[in-house]
Image 1 (tube, rainbow, N blue to C red):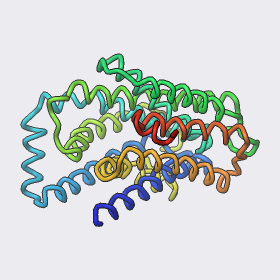
Image 2 (cartoon, one colour):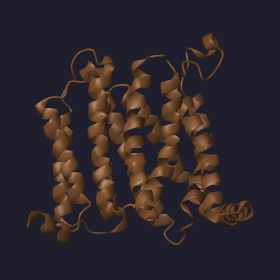
Image 3 (tube, rainbow, N blue to C red):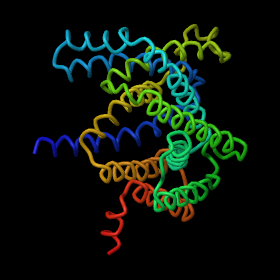
Length: 320
C-alpha cells in the first residue's frame, strides 16, 4: 500500500512539475523584467548540488556513508568523473536553450515541441548504441513529428514575442537544440559510462561539479546591459524566475523518483497530463487560443507517447 501511495504521489508531483516549470518560465519571460537567464541557469545548478547530497544522505541513511560514497565515486574515480564534463556542458547549453525558447513560444507549444527529444534520442540510440527500434516505435515517431508540426500554428496577437514568425523560428530552433543536447548527453552517459553505475544522486553531484563552473562562465559570455544600472546579477528576478529555478532544480530529482516507483505506462500518462495542464494553463494565464489544429497536434503527440512507450503485446491488448 505504501508503494502504491508513493507511486501516485510521485506521478502527481511529476505532472505538476512538468507543467509548472514551463508555465513559470513563460510567465517570467512575459513579465519582461530583463533578467539574465544565464544567471538563472547558474543558480539552478548551484541548487542541484545540495539537493543531490541531501537525497544521497537519505538513501544511505547515514551522513558518513554518503560522504564515503561521494569520496569513492568522485575523488576515487577521477577518470570517470572527468568523462562527466561532456554531458555537463551539453546539459548546461540545454538549460540555456530552454530559457531562450520560452521567450518566443507559448508554454503549450513548447511542451509539445520538446517531445521531439524522443525522436532525437531514438535516432542516437540506433546510431551510437547500435540498438534497434521496433516498427511501432518508428510509427510513433512519425506521429510525433506530425503532431509537432500541427502545434506550430502562430498564436493569437497579444502573446508577446511569440506572435512573430521570426521569433517563433528562434523558439523552435532553441527547443530543437535543447532536444539534441539532452539526447546526446543521455546517450553519451549510457555508452561511455555503461560499466559505472553509481547512485543517481552521486551522478547528479558529479554533473554539478562541472555544470556550476560551466554555467558561471556562461554568465560572463552574455552582455548584460542592466547589470551596471541595477548593481546585482539577479536584477529582474521575480517570483516567477525564482520559482522556475526551484522547479527546474527539483525536476531531475522528481524524474528519478518516478522512474523508481512508476511503470512506463503511468509515466506516459503523467507526461500526457502535463501537456494538457500546460495547454489549459497557457489558455488561462497567457490568453493562448486553443484551436482545432492545436488540439489535433496535441492528440497526436500524446498518442505517440503511449505508442512509443508500449510493448507490442500491450498494444495488441488495447486494440483487441
